[in-house]
Length: 269
Image 1 (cartoon, rainbow, N blue to C red):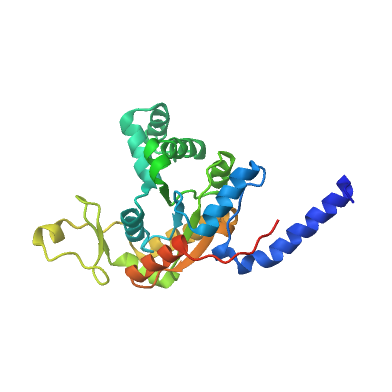
Image 2 (image 1 turned 30 degrees about the vertical axis):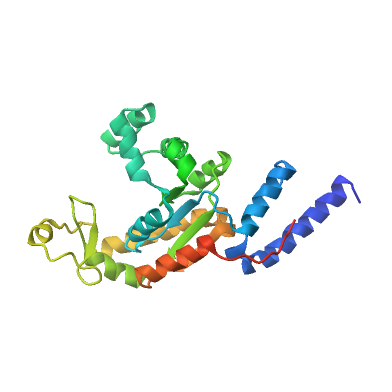
C-alpha cells in the first residue's frame, strides 16, 4: 500500500481522525514541525513535556474594553516579554525615518490606511530585533486579517500561545461608555469599574474619546468579531478562550495556567 494513491487515502483518513478529536485537546496540544531534524523534534517535544521555559511567543486578542491592555501589562510584568502593538511599532518606524516608516508616513499623510504589506513588514522587522529574540514577545491585536496571519506563517513566525479574551457585547458597551483616558500617561480608567485616583489634576485632564459611545462601540465590536473569525483558524491548536468578565487577577491567573499548565500526553501523527 506504499503507492501515491493508497498513501493519499491514508493521509486523508488521518486528517479526518485528527479533526474529529482535536477539539477535545486544544488547551493541551502543541504542533511540531515534522520536517525538522529528528533531534530537533525530539528536543522540542521534551521541552513541551517537561514544561521547560522556552521563549513565550504570544498573540492576545480582545475587543475594545475587553481588558486587553491591563492583561498585557500583567503579562509583561510577570514574564518579561516584549509588548508589541501595531500602533506603537508604526509610530516608532515613522519617527526613526526607516524605509518602511517613510512609506507608512506617506499613507498616513494622505489619510489612507497603511496597507497590509507595510504593516506586516514593520511587525516582522520588530520581531527580528534582539530583545524579541532573547525575551520573547506579546503581539497585541495583530494579526487582524487572514492576509496578515498567512504572512506570519509564511515567514516562519509561530506563536506558542493565542489568548482570546471573551466578553459579552453588552458588557463591552457598558465598559466603553464609562471609559476615560489620561493623555499624559496613556492609562485608561473607568468611572464605575476602575475609578481614577483621587487626584484633582489627574481627573481634570481625563479625556472621553469621541468613539466611546454605544453606537460607535457596536460598530467596533462587529469589526472585531470579523477580524477574529478571519484569523482564529490559524491558531486553533494554541488558542485558549479566557472569561474576560472575571476580576483582572482571576483572568491573569487563568492566562498563567494556560502558559504554565501541566500536560498529559496524547500523540498523533
